[in-house]
Image 1 (spheres, rainbow, N blue to C red):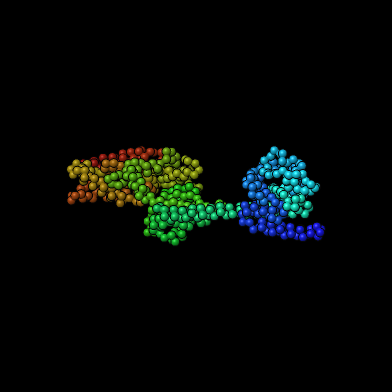
Image 2: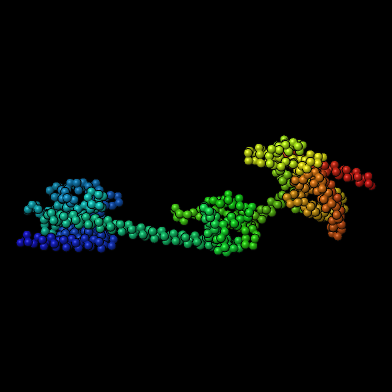
Amino acid sequence: MEAESEPYVRLATMRQLHQAVADLNTARSLADTLQTVADGIVIGLGYELACVNLVRADGDLVVAAFAGNSAAEALITGRVGSRSSWERRLMMGQAWDELRFIPHTDGWVLLDDDVPQWHTDGPDPRFEDEWHPQDRLYAPMYATGGDADLLGVISVDRPRNGRRPGAWGREALQMYASQAAIAISNARLRANMQRALVRLEREQQALRASEESFRQAFEYAPSGMAIAEMGGDQHGRLLRTNDALCRLLGRPASVLRRYSFADLVHPEDIGTLLRTSAEGGRAELRLGRRDGTYLWASLRNSVVADTADGPRFLLTHIEDIEERKRHELHLAHRASHDALTGLPNSAELRSRLSARLCERPNAAAGPVEARDAAHRDTDEPPAHGYEVDPAPGGPYDHHVHAVAPDTGQDDGAKGLAVLFCDLDGFKSINDRFGHHTGDAVLIEVARRLATCVRDGDTVARLGGDEFVVLADGLGEADAADLAVRLRNAIIPPIRVDGRAVRVGASFGIGWAACGMTADEVLRSADQRMYVEKRSRSKVHRRAG
């Protein structure tokens, strides 16, 4: 009768096992899966007690689920056993394929370890395969089967038939442990994916919040902001601009996207832009407005990346410094220009003159034939008053020497003429009509002198009633003609407060040459002016 019922028992067990495995795949969380594993052993495999010990991240095993006895469940759930104790327990057991069985006769109860356990006393078995209350059967679970990483251990007790499991029961338990390992691994994977998705969603929310914060900070910043391409053929092309920059330049965003910074910068500031168009670069330069005027602005650059390895962009902060720059230029102008006439002052005159002179006299200065000989074997025309010297500061220093024309030689040589002007009769105007009239005369003389010179020439007030004109590229005859024109411009009457006053002018012509200091050049012109003044005085005395 038992032989006939055995297939039915196995079929019923198979059905129960199938249902238990199916239940494993419906659990929604890792905790549910672990409890389903324990319940499936009690429901489907015919044991009264089942315990699932799960390997933690630190390697120790924790009682994660229990089924069959609420008192025992409350006693050991959550308790932890060390990995070394578990390994010793599994090593001492009898190997039933992958299962480990420890009979009560092996004295495991007396072991001094921390493996969570329960046990009760009972009589000795009455027959060979009878289950004793202190027998233990463990089913290790491996992540990939075999001797791979240990995932956990299922512990079972009290078979309902009171017997140790036979070959069929062992195979069923081992098969169930393998399916349980797969279910637990999948549950862990789902849990990790859910945590990753939650973390990703939080990061995306934070990114969206950060992008929105950046957008608002960019769009509503009180000063100009722009994002431009970095590198490549389109380097500097504007991709995005805020309202403040559009208002600053008087151009809509749709129009600005057609430009790069190089298109908007003043031509004289292109070099400054190129030197600072990089990460951390700063520049003060002029940007073009829609009406054709230029605005002084401070540009500060920083680099932002679209992704970790994605394209990089240049974030530029543009600040309006027009008022500050105007104030700086005004202060610089006041420091370098005469307050009364607006002409360059003595310091500025010496600075401009010194900029043209080097300390080393030109060895080639001399007769025109000697200077021309230096160019005889080249395609360059003779210097005629200037000598290019590539040597003073190295191979790339192309200083052009200032050379004085040979006095009295009508050789066509040209140089930097320095015309020293002293007004005749100015003191008497001051004494007779007062300083107010004298100042008005100086202002008008400055204006007349400035209208007689070329662009690039300098008219400066040296002090008092002394003026100096720097005119480059003149020969001796040219300088003399310029002095006559300047004197003729000064002589006509000057009307001040309804009266007409006159002043004359004496000019001394000096020449700037390398090897001379600015003071030496001015002193030379001053001395020639006094020579002319004395000669004109003698002529007037004879005429009188």
